[in-house]
Image (cartoon, rainbow, N blue to C red; front, side):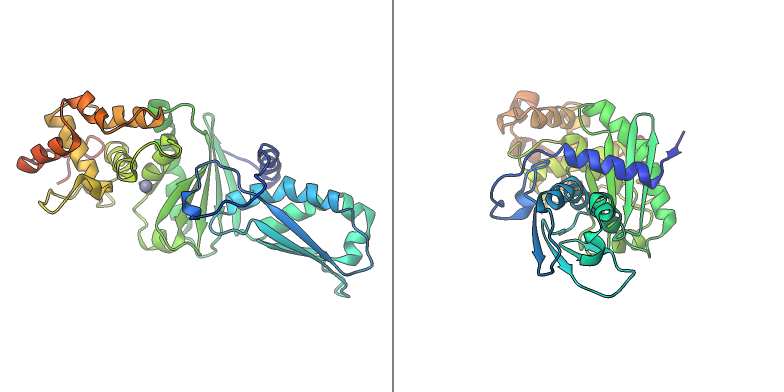
Length: 345
Ligand SMILES: [Zn+2]
C-alpha cells in the first residue's frame, strides 16, 4: 500500500537528516567537483550581513542554518551553493518576513527583532527554502521511502507517476538482490537547470525535466540510476566504463519496460571497445553470460563494492583477460537478447 505523508512529516525528516551530517571539513574541496566521493559531506557556511540596529544572536542563526540548509541543499541538487549570505534589512514592507533562495537569505529586521519570530527562525527558514520547490511528496511502501521534489511546474505529472511506480517496482528488487546495506530512502529531484539526462549521487537521483518531458517512456532511467545507488562502490573501486556497463546490464536484465521505451543493446561493430561503456559493455556482459560463464557482471559488481577488483579479476573469473574476452567476442558476437526475460520483436 502506498501511504502519502504530509509535508510537515517531510520537514521533520529533513531536519533529522541534517543532524545526521558529520562535521564539515575546514576547507572547501579543491579540483573538479564531480570527483567528490559519494556521501562525502560538503562544507556549508553562512555569512551574516547586518547593518541594521537589530542585534542578532549569531550562534542561534548559525544553528538554525546548520539544522536546515545542508539537507535542503543536498536534496535541491544541481549547483546549489554551499555558501550563503544572509542580509538583514530595514524595510517598511509589512508583509515581508524573510526570503530564502539557494545561497541568499534576506530577513526583515523588524520581523526578526520579535522574540517569538527569532525563536522560531529555524522553522521559518525551512518553510521559506521549500518555497523554491514546486512540490514535495513522500511515498512509503514496504520499508522503502521515496521523496519526490519537483522543481519544475511544467513537468508532466503522468511521467512523475510512472517514475514513482518504476521505483517501487524495481529498486527493492535490486537492493535485496545485490546490496541490502544501501539506502532504502531515496530522493528524486527534477530540475530545469540540469543539462544532462539523469545522475545519481548520495541517495539522490536527479532528472532533467526537459529530457523526461521529451522522452516520457524512458522510465528505466530509474533502473540504471537506481542501480548506481545499489553499487555504492565509493571512490577508486574501478574504471567508470565498468560501473556504467554493469548499470546498463542491470537495466537490460531488470528494466520495467525497456522494450516499450525502444531501448536496446546495439549490435556489435568492429569499431567498438568494451571501454565504450553503457550499452556496448552491457551487451558484452550478456555475451559472456551466454558463451563463457554466467554471472560475471554480478561477480564484478560484488568485487567492485568490496574494493577487491583488479584487472586480474577477469582472468580469475573466466580464465581470460578482458582484452582476450573482447577479442573472442569480436570474432563471434552473435547473442540472443532477452530484455527482462523478454524477446524484442
Ligand atoms: Zn550511469
